[in-house]
Length: 77
Length: 210
Image (cartoon, rainbow over all chains, first blue to last red; front, side, top):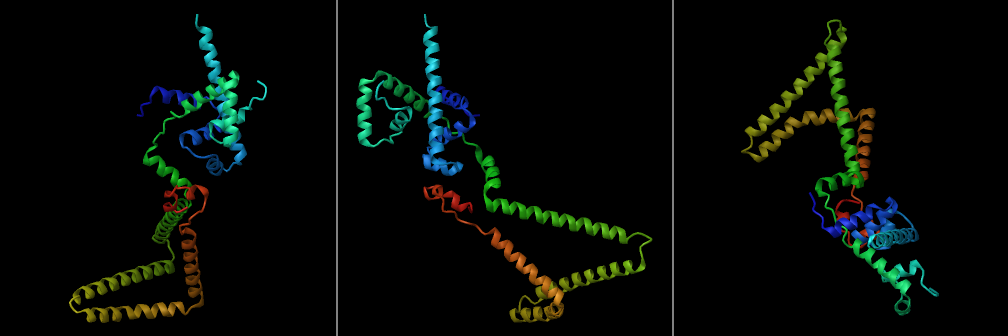
């Protein structure tokens, strides 16, 4: 059984919230530390597609983070 | 928000992909633009969270199962093993069926004679092998005697083999078998790929026979 810290749980929740085709590139980039070129080769995808997916995935995560912040601040008295 | 960099440029900046002059201009812009600074802060939080992704160790069993499915040399070995077992099973079933059929009371006499011949030749071969081995053990003390005795015992077999191979059909089948074995070995040889991943330090891939 693997024990996870709070940060690891939050990172895993973030990843799980992504669609699979975004999740794969984000894991390869941020967990496996592969470069864009290496991800493109491993997944047999054009470099532009890999870059676009990673950027779009981070944008999605950023939007969700901002929404969560707004909810938390909105709930505060 | 005039002259604000688009989302892609913000991410390129955070990845350190912008040329120094553009990066400097971007940092200057951030000092004056609260909206872009807030965007960058959010992206930094996302990247910070992603840095904590746990690296799961799947364990050797899972790794082996995956490699068995994707490494070409292992996949070929698996198929050769399956074909070998299938051949052995088919031979065993066929032999059992033939012996069962030949052992029935109403089996024609000529079949019984052929089966008796087969058993006789099998027994003869087993006795010949046993006799050769016993003689070899008895002459272990004399090296040349052992060699000579082995030659004497083997010469009838060599002559019989030479006689068999003088038949064009037997020689043709043997040649085809040798050719097939050679092709199979060539197909199973380890291959080394020159991909960017292997060049960039994933050295174990070479050892796995890609």
